[in-house]
Length: 364
Image (cartoon, rainbow, N blue to C red; front, side, top):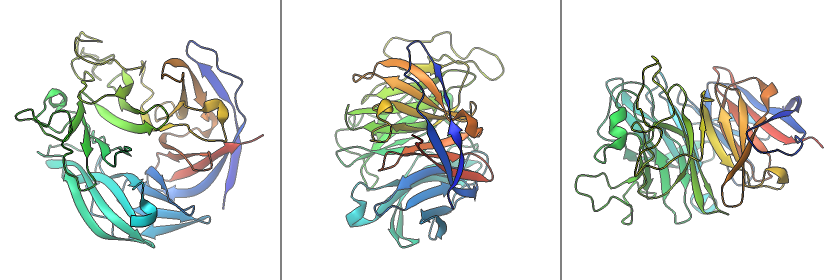
């Protein structure tokens, strides 16, 4: 079923030299998917893929199987089924975690459900976290997840667009990255647990619409990226309790052309390590750790919806930005997710009503 697209070149960007482009081959693993949003690799070689319309599929042996038991989602605008993450001990417990838009147009929020995958069915489906209070409007849900070595996981929430000021407020779940236990509870060492009126699940604040979240086990760093408005997309290194500025400090403008803030930085707020003006619309994030592309070791791979590429952010061992490179431009489609497979290949999803799952391997 795999179908080769092309050998893809790359384009160097940024201030530092990038080594000669690596020859790559892109294969279509699955097609005809409704806005595939996220991928998760399972032991044994199968892959889960979410579709924004609320469907979950399992890819194995070149075939695509529907998975039953998925909870109902609010599917409107940007709302729907989002991330899927397998528990680090999936081999023994069979647990997966789904993030999705829950509710209706006038009252909705980002929700996480935990379930056990048995064959092609979800059982024991349990909602473990909902961003409360609910908000109105079908946009900016965030919804990326990432597990940490201590067994907790992070969940990004968007600012809801119309509610951007709440990204700064500790009594609101909007515009945050949350840290939760696998039961959806608040870890006792979260940074705002002892703050009166604060939501104890908050790990960081001041985010707009985060759609990339990845933990690098070698550096021990959490990377996050988020959509700016008109310009001002960001890549951040997350630290507990830090404030990442939105909407007080931003490199972007309002879509109307109006100024959101006169500040690109502000005292007490953490600056991004990368920002993009104009926007590339980042979605999906992976830290490359694999054998297939040693030239990319430790670099960030960022999907780009507007620029229709994967942006490689070349990093030093201490996470200093050394340069950027445009990858897989000839795919010519909006890239929604980027994941590194156990064999070191890079898997992508394309954001389309007839979207694809792509596998990138080395051509030489």
